[in-house]
Image (cartoon, rainbow over all chains, first blue to last red; front, side, top):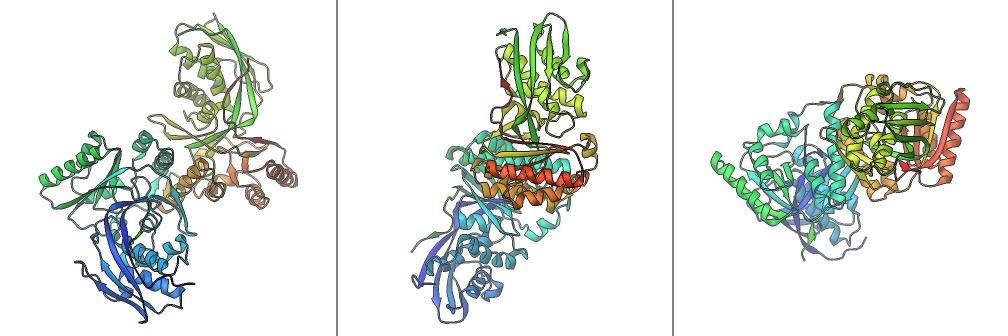
Length: 310
Length: 310
């Protein structure tokens, strides 16, 4: 183990988990919004957190997503006493676009860079999952994997952890975050524990189609495969205007889309920037009509994941 | 519509449906065994069947798999009165390697060739599905699609029919057909209509991995993804020696495998011919020890599907 430098700043991307039919196994990173973290090796034991953002997240490392991920990292490198973390978070917690994963992934990639990339990406995902546990109680990886690997990632298996990058075309992504709260734990609880075999078959046909469509850059196939007969019919109830947005966006040419992670954000994939902007306008119109506050982002798939800045 | 010639002989391949985790959506064609069909345009209305094989299949067209497929084809081309079909079938019915699909697919490809390929492949699958209905009562396409398209095929959806060829490497395939009867209808009936969501998630992770592994020619990923937590645990009960064969074959280097279609045949995929033969020897040993008759085949994935002979 070798220390490359004492301090580093990274940007860490928002991510879209599930990608409609790929519940708990697929996700991708996007270029906007993103968090910024500056990490410095410290002689003080543990993780010292300095918040330079507006989210007032916990300062105790073990209660903080980034802190918990860094503590897991530190356990594996007894040579390092601690880190000081300056958080300039921009991805709003609870948005459904991987805010906690951006924290956890960003800081472990930063820490690893300082140690001259001592660990591999799979190790980093494992450390970052300790952060997700703080956020939602579950050590899931469907946002962390794309944040660290970039692009579209498949989590074939959690035990043992098996992450496969899926080469996907540079698609445009439009995200709307209506200002309502959907807690991940609640979104999970309303799911049925049993599914009909016939629905599961439809779902895995679509997943196979989506993966083939991504790798073969077959936009029509991607579009046809963006269908979820299991999770979306249940979770969409929690998101006002969901089907109106989805249907209207497809009418203006979006390939498809759905709930980002467990919501409340909705994402749509498009082949061109023009369509992605038309999609954004529809999202705005629908939520203006409902009278609900929202943020929108028009961005692209982030093929790189967490980026080293300086 | 143009008649290209009056008579043609084709060979039609055996097929492996499901491919472990891809129940009802994936399948591939193999080069051995295969059926031979000679089809001649006839002035006699309907389909005249001449069996030159040992299976004594029904001579009434509507009760015969090939006949029913040809009748569906004839309905779409009123310009043709009928066909005479000489069947030299070699794929044993009830083997689980797509015997009925070989009949249905072979004759419709032959008929289409005589008509200068008037119909597209999707049309041919639809005609051939009428044959499957005679065989098992269900118009499924998971053997017909690979028999017609060749290689590995994905049936993303049955309604509407959406078939996607999946580019896969040239793998070796070893098949053992133990001489017991497993009726497709029975194999279907013992399946549970509900599955646990957590099992479905594992399954679709494996399906996504298998499709990515095929397209990216990632043999390790193919191997890890050849896992079925839903269908195999139930259906394997019907097949003596199943797990002993599967485990021992993987020990000698097979990538993996499982039940072919609804059984009783078992197939294993291997990267080399040597391993495929070692796999065959294990299959023989196990069934010799059990005292059960069997056939084996060592072959490769058939990338072409039904072949025009002359």
